[in-house]
Image (spheres, rainbow, N blue to C red):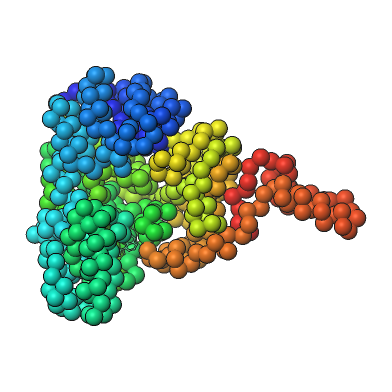
Length: 498
Ligand code: MV4
């Protein structure tokens, strides 16, 4: 079995920190890499070694595949963990790592390239009995053929890019006479975004939920799933809140989806931690969408309900160990939620909010976990993903996980930048979210910036009270805010909507 006592982490931020923590618990040393913008980042300080890569743009630092492999060899690391994003789903990089005699902590290059193309992915899984959305077999380039297929499956249909991601190159078509025009638009959008203009057609599921299954496979043919994550609360294809388990799955549907997800892993000889994405309609019919061949941002909610450490499992699989448990050993324990905290202003159309974290104090206490890569006083760099933290809660049931999340949002103190914490509070308090009756349209259907009542800054409240008292000639009494939150002129804003 291959020996691993040092890992290079080809990533930054919260996920680099997350990987360092598991490696350390396994007595494995870590090598961090960093760009000019990340000199003072926690992942650099927390790793056993850190190597400077270059200027802030990823193309000159975190994406320098040859240099990363060179550094791993120089420093005596036997394996590279790619995290998510950057080089994590680059089949060429995974192949290069192996060719250099190193271990890529992730699946084989072939699994990555098959699942990276939505048409190849559908083709790979179709003989395994996995439900697919009715649609065209393979790519379509003739508009006449497209119109014929669309009529056959029935409108509305969705034209999708084979190389697609993040909703790019996706067009909904309601009527036959629009097929030609929409297809031309989807093709050109796909070509400019991915360099591949191939498109295909599917029946449009109009009110879907996004439900994904976490899978784990070793190199000995053992495969388990860690149940589902519900990821329907998203904004413009960016996930906002994830949870496990889903509020609406029955044990029967859960078991069937889990089995289908394992078939998907089998279909592409999957090794390691991966995620099979499904969309689900209102009748709980579900359809395979794609497989993500990496550790995902939202993996913590699966860890919280399963008791497993997915990064440790990835490393154990990479060094050739067999899984130490079977499907029947796994059960769902309680409920977990994740809120992604972005440096964006939800009151101003989620405009990026960069600057210095003047105050940054994490929530603590029962059932709260914060995965982040920042500290008080640090700048939020403009070069990378705007996610500053993942706020994760766990409770005995969904209600307790929600209550803990609301409590944690209130405890979180961030000033200097705007964040999506107040938006998270809006979602968690919304009747549609609380009832579990929502779909991927939740945000566009229910959210307006006006619904975020102005953040009540304690100092603003105090000033207003003083002003009012001056007019009516009284000494101001303590405001409710002051009574609940201590000194009026506190440095932080309260993440509070009224
Ligand atoms: C769909 C769909 C409805 N019908 N496919 C969006 C990104 C890509 N991964 C697949 N997506 C969708 N595919 C059919 N046949 C609706 C979406 C979709 C969506 C899916 C998951 C989470 C959020 C979404 C937001 C808009 C559209």
